Length: 167
Image (cartoon, rainbow, N blue to C red; front, side, top):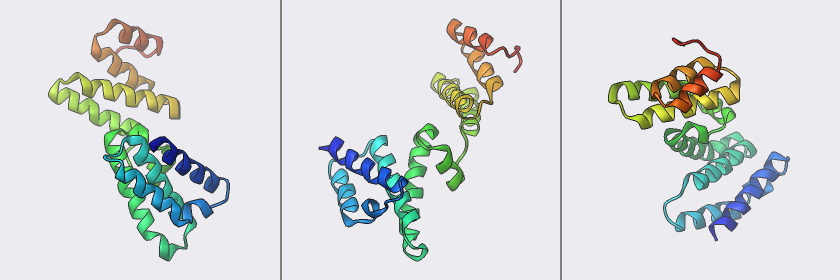
């Protein structure tokens, strides 16, 4: 049931991207969102689809009618970004002024330094990897974070990045 609802939302969003906004503007799109809500607490994938639907509606509606959808999209994308910035596309991060993977990685690295909790360091590494993939920059931050783990595989990866010790 959930997969079918998500597939329907995906199709409507894809048609909008192709220039046909009728699927995101029709009332059935909001009925689909209601049905998803009835299924219980949403996962990140569901939130991402609903946020995208509201962003599409915002883009397709006249400005005076689009404010509600913009606010809903912003609220949902804010939740997703807090959970994991990688769940929000660079285009949407720029639109709403969300922190980049680099900035989020630096924040997680600071949390690691304050708490010593490895999950913060692992999250920072993941975010720095995203920065490298998306922008082709940040190898020095990734290498420095990898070296902090002390794990041999991470040390090898840091050395493969060809960045000298010390960042």
